[in-house]
Image 1 (spheres, rainbow, N blue to C red):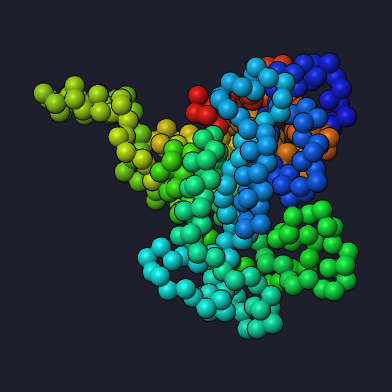
Image 2 (tube, one colour; image 1 turned 135 degrees about the horizontal axis):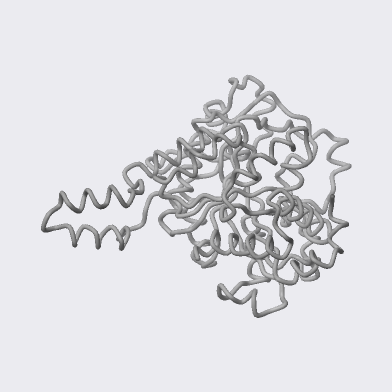
Length: 383
């Protein structure tokens, strides 16, 4: 089963109704953006990850703007929903200066946030000057306000990532000039990782900003699902949902104030919350058993799970993903390409995972397009 099967009539009808990419990175190959108007996918949700692509995502979103939540239904044009955020792979490039004006020395900063302790001075000198977290949050808030439907993303935690080594002369000469700088691009890996505590600082700051503006977040998690849950749980502590039975008991105990209390509960919070209203666990690789932690009825965040052909269905663990997809409620599943180039290949990847999810869920392709389209809309727009 693959992208070629997209020529099936039922699948073509699904494309016409709208198939939405919940997470992709075409700004990593800017020469591919001209292929976006000819794609089958209706809307691309494009993620920023590092210093080199924040402006690029902004520019592409301005080129394919979505003016209202129904425009993609009325028009045959293609649209972009941008997401602005700092990926955990690059979290070492940021220092937390929110409570101090002191700018750390680059060497000292990297020795503090990397593990094991870096003694290789030559390697440290290849790393970029670290950036201010406070300034990044200010800049990101401005971008989010500029694009009213923009998300926070890609953010998260990653326990397995290792920093790439410096470019070797022959690697530099063979580098693809069409690729946006800053990613690994096949370089050899160093032994150094970003300390999880530092990753958590960067993630929490961004999730708080998403909460301030009421924006959803797309979350990366590799071998860190428990740690991501811990960060979220620390943010929503005190804001857990209560059941109807608990409401009734509280109402009875409140006596004369019951009506006022119930009205406040129904109206929801009067001020921004310190966590995003909705999150998507992108290319979710956790076990089915862990789903209950995110889908617990007390969790005040609406949690979605997206799947990609390239991450979830291409390795030895692909069989395990079937059980996970089956266990996720129909209303909480999304699909994505997670691809770094717009065009036919992105459509093919997206179409392949669309078919896989529909087959696992035993949906017809038309019904699958309806369900997945509605889920994407609820995740991005909230309704």
